[in-house]
Length: 254
Image (tube, rainbow, N blue to C red; front, side):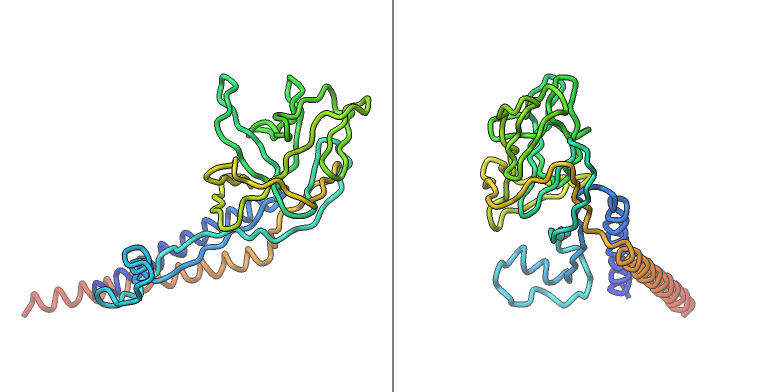
């Protein structure tokens, strides 16, 4: 009976995690360059063998068909570009990410984020920034401009209002097999941003934004499926609890 409790309870936890991930996808459907995430599950036994025994497939204890979250991967498939005509909007056509450097109150660099969101602005000092995150990095450091009358060519080269070369927007790709961690609002991090490789063949489009790859119809369908599964697990837990209580009372009566 205890195994039934654990199975139903982990079913509830699994579906709650799925709903959280899916609703976050829905909330970011309008975030430029956002990429959808999915919950991948496995059984407790599989996770235990993976973590304790490595490649050893020998059984450890008895089977327990309890589901746990194995990983929450991000789907990096490309999306469409939308023309905005705004000079501070940028989109990437091809692989890679913009690099945005967060700073502390004293202006010291704290973290480098990767993003496909090119909805940039100019701060009070003329630096190109992603609002609420940090400064956009060029190959020589933060990109500094005097006004919005600048141009960016397809290779990422930045030219001021007088046509003078300023810098080149830094677009990088994490090395193969590098773990990419998802942060809030379409931001991503790697263990060491310095190891990321400069993208080649990726085009930078000024006056355009990349749409998210969220299909709202698909996301709503998956949310409803997860809600139904959560309700089923909850009902199963209540039934098991009722059976357990009845069994306990009858045994006590004997």
